[in-house]
Length: 107
Image (tube, rainbow, N blue to C red; front, side):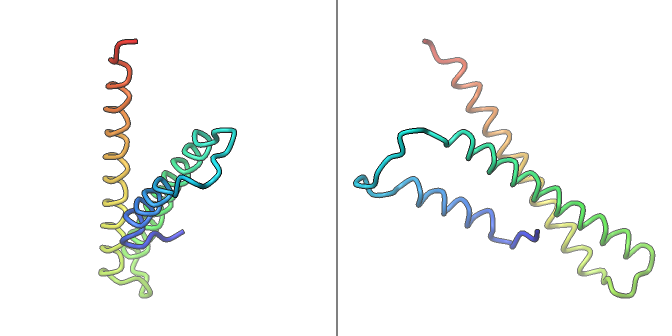
């Protein structure tokens, strides 16, 4: 699975548009958003892992002198992995902040 450079932004826009659906649409009787969110989060972490694995394989191939792998390709894959991981960490930090804020609310 290869993530394009604007994939995260595109997913966020898609989620934003889904949240602003017209009010006349039927609202499902059962809220399955928690399972959908869990699957979405799991898929995102798996994509980041795949990107990091691919970058690691390219680095190893380049270090072993594989003529099919260029330095530029290796560096780009490494930077993609770094950006994807940093974005994941930032999302995690926001979730932790939101959780702490919710837990500190008086009941």
